[in-house]
Amino acid sequence: MVTIREIANFCGVSTATVSKALNHGTDIGKATALRIRAAAQKLGYYPNSAALALKTRHSHNLGLLTLLRDQNGLLHDFVTLVINAFQAEAERNGYDVTFVSENIRGNTMTYLEHCRYRNFDGVALICANFFSDSVREFMQSDIPCVTVDCYQTKHYSIMTNNDQAYAALLDHVMRFGHRRIAFVGGRDSAIADIRFDCFLKACQARGIDLPKEYIHSAYYNDLISTAEATRQLLALPKPPTCIFYPDDFACMGGMQELRRHGLSIPRDMSVVGFDGIRLSQILQPRLTTYRQDMDAIGESAMRILRDAIEKPTISMPKQSYIPGELIVGETVARI
Image 1 (cartoon, rainbow, N blue to C red):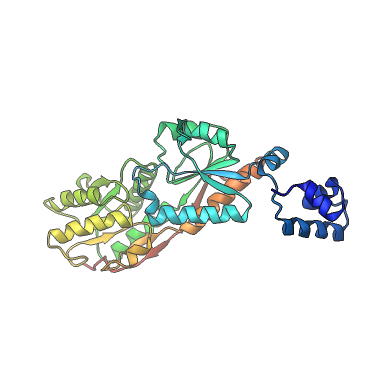
Image 2 (image 1 turned 135 degrees about the vertical axis):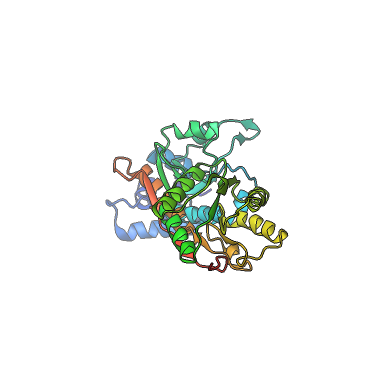
């Protein structure tokens, strides 16, 4: 590894002059500074991250915590795109990103212990299991963090504007004449209760009656539990005419179950998804859904976390909402 002393010898200057040039000091000639920085690049010099952290008191390393019920959750479009956007924005701002785990070199430790061990400047909790004791312990710490899809934390949080989302979806299906509307919500997730409350408010504001038997739950991104919820709805003496599903991928489990019963979508049953993943628009028929702006969520989460780290005295909103977009597909029929 090239050192500052080697650059100094190469340029015929002192190590102090090299240090000033590399740190863009003002008390050094412009030509000299440019010559030294060019030499550093030619020699392959990189600042030592540990030394830089000691000097600036920042590691420029962020933790990323994504504890999911489904071990394949990172393959899901929403999770992947939010994380990709977060990481790209982090890199643009000079930060590295490291996944947080409870195992380091064979040693078990809590998420909080891992974060302190790695000396993260801050941590993003994206689609994490917010009911986990280890996650809850971390969220009570003083480490700057931002959460995605979690409400009322002591830290900053960001999510889609679910009030707008369900208002738009309900207005759409009601324009097609639907009034018997069932809701299959998420299960065992912090965002599930938020979305159900938003759906209820939208129904009440529009005079839609929601019988208890029309309300079911299923795991996010899970075909099996949504298929079971669909079977129960179809077994009712008076089934709904439209079913809202927790997410686009899970919706496919419901659609498969409808077809097993010989029902046509949307002629015999209308369905609505949530997320707006790419696969939803390849399905036949194309899914009517609400697209979350994954890029904006990931980028905004990073910017909020950066400000919490670099400008801790500036007051920022605890909760930020990102608008999405209604995607009108072919799965809602006029009745």
